[in-house]
Amino acid sequence: MTVNESVDARIEPDEGPMSEPEGMLGLGLLAGPANVIMQLARPGVGYGVLESRVESGRVDRHPIKRARTTFTYLAVSTSGTDKQKAAFRRAVNGAHAQVFSTDESPVKYHAFDKDLQLWVGACLYKGVVDVYRLFVGDLDDATADRLYLQGRALATMLQVPESMWPADRAAFDRYWQESLDKVHIDDTVREYLYPIAVSRLRGMTLPGPLQRRAESFALLITAGFLPQRFREEMHFSWDDRRQRRFDRLMGVLRVVNRCSPKFVREFPFNVLLKDVDWRIRTGRPLV
Image (cartoon, rainbow, N blue to C red; front, side):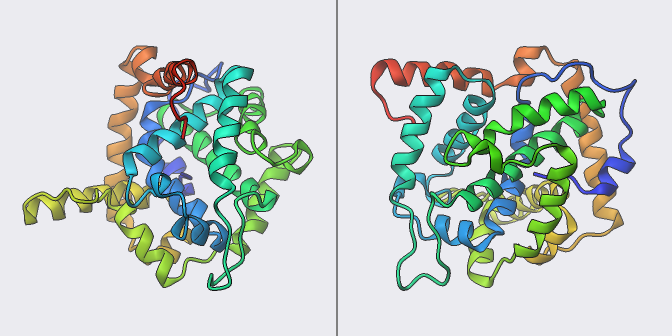
């Protein structure tokens, strides 16, 4: 969910840095497809998801359910209670136990691989920070440090030990740059990711021209949230005209976000935490 440098340069922060980090922003959902692409750009994650035996968790077949699980994970790991975190950790681990490579898999992977989990957590953290910078404003050092400590839970709520999470933001930047050398999206994973990039829902289509326009708009948003390296891996075209369209759209959404009450800004993450409590209380599945 990362925003490229040109976006940060063209959309200037408003009256100054934010003073306190708020909850998860609902507008961050727009960056979800881009963040999925970033996560799956590591082959071990890409094939782990593509070949997953957990039918109910496949984003290509059950996008709404998968989105609920992912957004709930974001909410619980950063703002949940100890009880919510423990319950969600057990549920995710149960699903991850079924995700491992076979002799036929092009790459070796296991959902309990700490290095791959660290990468996924790093992508989620990058997404949270980029969404804040776009829709709230720039971060001063103290706020950025607090957000970084909060973001650590995105990786450490599962098997990643705290010692693996980079010690500070500078160390994280080094980790991120070094990890880009391991990024590669082959034709198989790219074909799997493209419908996600254009928000194409299985079994749901509009009349031809409307479908093409909707997918073109969705692709603009997805590609806009991706760094150039990931666009190239996905074979997405990008130029100054597309950048300007993306900047204008994000500028409008920033104004909308600033004018919205806190409950609306943080929806649906605030509601998902209540949903976790309800699912725990009634014995319903969390993932």
